[in-house]
Structure formats: C-alpha cells, structure tokens
Length: 230
Ligand SMILES: CSCCC(=O)C(=O)COP(=O)(O)O
Ligand SMILES: [Mg+2]
Image (cartoon, rainbow, N blue to C red; front, side, top):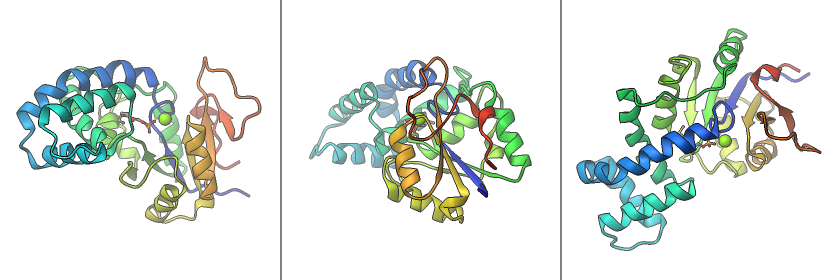
C-alpha cells in the first residue's frame, strides 16, 4: 500500500505552461535587466548574484556590462543558473506587482492542490526558479494567491534538479522518508533522479504533446488524473 504524505511539484511544464515562462517572463527579464543592474547594481544582494554569475562563468574581474551581456545570453539559453534565477526573480517582482502579467497555472491545478491539502497532504515546490520567484509566481497566479497551499519551496540552492542528492536533501527537509513523497515534473531526467532517491514520480505530459511509448514513469495528462493514494 502506497502512502503519500507530501507532494513536491515542479512549475514550468507541470503546474504551468512553458510558453508563459518563455514568452512572458523571459522577455520581461531580458528587457529590464540592463536598467535593473544600472539602478540596483550597488545593492548587496544584486552585487552578490552578479559576482556569483561572473564566478560561474570563470570571468575574473569582469566589468558590469560584461556580466549583463553574459546574463542576457543565459536568458536566451534558458540556463538554469542559480545566480541568473535569483536576479530574474528580483526583476519579475516589478512585473507582478504592477499587474503587467499574472502567472499561468493550468485550469485544474488550483482546485486539485486544494483537494490534496484537504486530504491532509503537504505540498512543496521544487523549481529552478529562485524561491522568491516561486513565491511571486504563486502569489500572483491567474487562479489567485495559491501560496497558502504550500508548506515550503526548494530551488537550485538545494541542488540541481537532475541530481539524486537534491532529492535526499528535500526529503530530509520535509521530514518524510522518500517512499512517502511524490515528485511531479515534465522532465524525465528530474524524475529519474527523484526515483533514484526513492521518491514516487509522476510525469506530466500535457496536451498536445504525444504520450511517450514506452514511458519510464507514470504519465499524467493533468493533475486531475493523479491519485496519490493509489
Ligand atoms: C518560478 S520562476 C519561473 C520559471 C523559471 O525560471 C524556471 O527556470 C522554471 O523551471 P522549472 O524547474 O520549474 O521547470
Ligand atoms: Mg519543468
């Protein structure tokens, strides 16, 4: 008998569309990044992450303009850099708060998260987006403020999403054995890592993507199809 006590979900491609991230969030960050660095570049948090980005790229004594160019290139490449994600989160805050956009969530997601909470399951997020960016995402979602539903958030400061050790750390932080945890994602390498750590896994393959054949994880078209107790 499988007893799931907590669900850990990815965001992009799982609760929410890849298009929203690619066509709304990334262009907003690209457009605002140079002015953001110009205005806030002396703030200690911003300085820290600019320095971390330069360090990650092996750029010794890089000028601010060079780091901005590097970050713009990383946005184009969708690089899952912790430093880039932290800076993007700071920039997206302005867009959410000004009402420039709301975060996309698939239509069934909010109701299904509420139903799982009502069944006593604890809910967590694990995304490459920074924890502040995740919190903004769900505070300003199209379905309203969903943050009260989540017990915690994990980003790549816990570790890369394709590494087994990251899932051990999450299980430890959640305070449950991995066999009581379900991880949901659209990326098979993330699911492989979670399973290797002992998690149950659910692979979100949303319409109109073809169903994988054969599938190496349980496949779901949407959250309504997931039955954590089964
Ligand atoms: C929640 S922040 C916006 C999404 C983002 O930048 C990202 O990298 C999401 O990746 P995920 O791990 O949720 O697939
Ligand atoms: Mg994803």
